Length: 521
Ligand code: TEU
Image: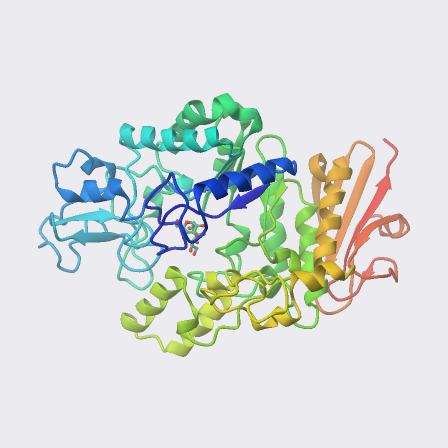
C-alpha cells in the first residue's frame, strides 16, 4: 500500500497539513485527472493507496474558516473554537488568551482575530485553526468529503492527529510548563471525552459499507496503550491500527529538542509492551520513520562506518515484529539526516517557529538551537529522495524546494538497486519473508534479554515454527545470550546482514540475524 502525505490544495505552510480545499490536488503535485491515473496504475499493479486525512484542523484559507471568521453571527462561526478574551483581561494583552495552552508549534495556541476581537484555537500553527467536532455539521461535512474520495476509489485514510478531535469543552488551563510562560493543555484534547464516539460515528457513516477493502490508520500522538486497544479492537468499529509515538519519544528530554541518547533497554521495554498489549485484540503499526522524525539510521543506528549494516539491522528488527510495517521513502536506501548548517536551510514550520521562539523570547544562543535542529528537525527526513548521483539527485531538473543531501553521490536508488548487498535489497528480502512465512505476520511475540543494553532479541512463534531474531545495537562484538543458544546457532539462518556467519551467536558490530527452527509441538 502506498500512503501519500497531503496532496490537496494548500498554502503549504505546514507541507500540506494546512488544507484549503479537501476535494482537489495542489498544482505543485498535479491535477485530479493525474491523481486518478495514479490510482488506476497503483490498482493495476495489485497495490492500494491511502490518503492523508487532516481534519483536526483546516488551513486558515479554507472557505469554512473564511466564512467562520467573517462575523460573530456567521452561520459557520461555531465550526471552529472561538472565544473572547479571558475574564478581567483586555483583548490583545499578554495573558488575555482564553487558556494558557501552548501550541505544538511554539507560542500560544490562541490567535486573536482583529476583525471580531475574539481568539481562535490552533493546536498547531496559527494558519491551522482547529475544527469544532462538537458541531454535527462539521462532522457531516467531513464524512461527505471522505465518501467522495472513497467513491473515487481510494483504499483508506491515514488520519492526522485524529485523537485530538474531541476537546474538553470547558477548556481549562493546563499545568504550567517548566519555562513558566505557558501551560500544557494536552489532557483536554488528547483522546478527549468524545473521541471514541466520533470515530464510531465516522466508522458507521463512512467506513462500514466498504470495511473489508479499507485501511484506516489513526495517527495518535501520546495515545496510551490501553486506549490503543480500544481504538483498534475490531468489535468496536473505530480504526484498524494506531500510529503511536512512544518509541520515537525515548530520546526526548523535557521536550523533543532536548536530546538524550536512546537506551536500548527503554526501546525494548516500550516496543515489547505494545506487542504484548495488542497481542489478543487490536493491531500494531511498526515504524521508525515518517516525515516528522529524523532519519532512523542517524538516530538509532550509525550513519558513518556502519551505515549499511545498521540500516539493515533496524529494518530487520522492525519488520520481524508483529504488526504492519511502514517504510518511509528513502529509509530503504539508508538515507541519513540532513547536514544543514544554517537556519536558512530549513523549511519546516515547527523548526522555524522553534528557532524564532528560542532566539526571540528565550534568548537562547543560536548555535545551541541549531544543534538541536540538527538532531531532531523534521527536515532531516524531508530532503529530496535520492534517485541518482546527479546534482539534484534525479528529484527535479529545476531548483529543489529544500537542499538535497550531498551524500546523494553515494546513497541513491540507482546504486542501491544495482548492488545486491544494499539496504534496498535487504528490505525486499524482509518484505518477501513476511509474505512467505506466516509466523512473521501472525505469530506470537516474546521479548528476550530485556536488560541487555546491546542485544535486541526476540522469538516469534506460530504452531511448530519459531523464529529467533538477534541484533547487536553496538559497534563492538556482543554475545546474544538467549536461552537454547547452542541449538539456535546451528539452526537455519533465514537472513542476516553480513555476507557470512561466524562464531555461534557472537554478533559483530551492528549484526542482525534471523534463525528458524521447527519445534516439536
Ligand atoms: O503530526 C502530529 C504530531 O503531533 C507530531 O508528530 C508533530 O509532527 C510534532 O511536530 C512532533 O514534534 C501530524 C503530521 O504528521 C505533521 O506533519 C503535521 O505537522 C501535524 O500533524 C499537523 O497537521
